[in-house]
Every structure is written in structure tokens, then in C-alpha cells.
Length: 146
Image: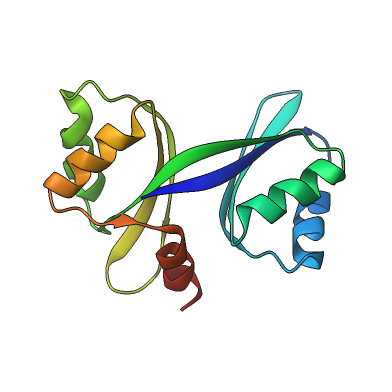
């Protein structure tokens, strides 16, 4: 299952991250997860939210340029080597990982990795064939907020 992720550029200076977060909060849109990457001049905020369409509309109305991408969330064992076992599936498969980020739940010895693949459908097929749980957006929110 692919999940829609919102990405927006922010100036790399103090106070830039609060406004998009505030806009989403005021609209009652929850954030499942986010990541912020930076360069010297700008930051790239990536968000998975409870309602990506409404979130995008609110952010665009506020003047942000929002890019929507499809990512894949995967549940893995939270132990040494959990990531390596997963990456082995893609090493020889011709599927490129463009970027990823991860978080743990602090329970059940599970972690979630969020991937941006160049071939998300092929990646999902490979993951499912290996018996790896591909997490959908609703399940992602349930796991984080439980």
C-alpha cells in the first residue's frame, strides 16, 4: 500500500517549521510522522498526515509549494540487522531507494521504515513476497497513536 507524503521547501532560518505545523494543527490534521532535511539555504519538510488532500490544500492556500509523493511504509524487527535483512531484498533487484527515514514505537520490538522507491509497485510486490508487512496509512496512524 502506497502512502501519500507531503513535501515542502522551507527557508533554513529560525521559525520556518512552526507555521506549516501550526496550520495543520489548527485544521485538525494530525501528523503521523515527519522528517526535516537541510542544506545551507533551505530545508525540506516531509510529512505523512491524517488527511493528505486537505493538508495539501491548506498549505498551498498559505503559499507553500507542496509536492505529493508516494512512499511505502514497512514494518521490520527493531533489532540489529533488521534493516540489513530488508535491504538485501533490493540489493540485486534493480529497485532504487531514493531516500528513507525510520522510527520505532518503543513496544513490540517493531520499527517502521518509510521508503521512497523509484519503483514503488515492484518494491511492494517484492516485500509482500518476502512476507514483510507493508503498512497502510490508517495502520500507520493506529500504531503511532496507540
